[in-house]
Amino acid sequence: MTIGISELQGTDLTAGQNVLNVMRNVGIIIGMALFLSMLSGNITDAKSQTYDYAVGQINKIDVATSSKTTFKNKLHEKLVSGNSNNVNTSNKVKSSTINSTKRNELINVEYTKIVAQKQTELGVAMPETVTTTIKQQVTKAINKKINTLNSQITHATKNIKNHLQNKLTNSFLNLYTLEYPLILISLITVFIFKRKNS
Image 1 (cartoon, rainbow, N blue to C red):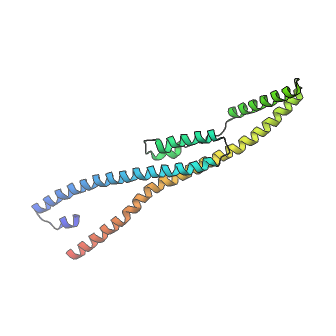
Image 2 (cartoon, helix red, strand yellow; image 1 turned 90 degrees about the vertical axis):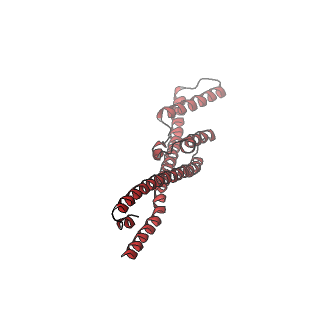
Image 3 (cartoon, rainbow, N blue to C red; image 1 turned 30 degrees about the vertical axis):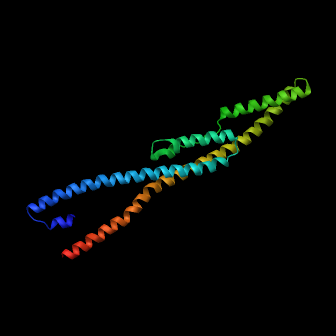
């Protein structure tokens, strides 16, 4: 259109420039609306695909079914149910590893349970050396289990974050990939039009 208008003269040139400005503004508005609409759809698809991937990762973690359900519900709330198409969602996917407070709580619960069971079986209070040994054994077993579990959770969280980041990146890149043929066609059209005029 710009090349075509450049051939005009006098009042026709002024009118042509006004038409070009209007068309340019309309094109920008339509283009942005279309771009943002497609981007929004791509981001929604990326989050949905990441949720499906995350469910598979969570199922591999060796925890109770109730804990898996809690993890899945939190991810569903962040990735699928949320109304926002914020591209920084990957920063909100946090690792829920077992901290030292929870570790100590688990050790004390298991230790108390074992000591109470042994005392019920024996019918007498156990010596302090025996309870200390039991405490050490329980601590060792719980620590081993928690370290394995934390490693699985950290690994799964990292995989989910990477998957989401890749999907969000592709959401943008796919739009630009669609634009390349249009840009190429426009350049060829301009070249042909200019050549015919000359």
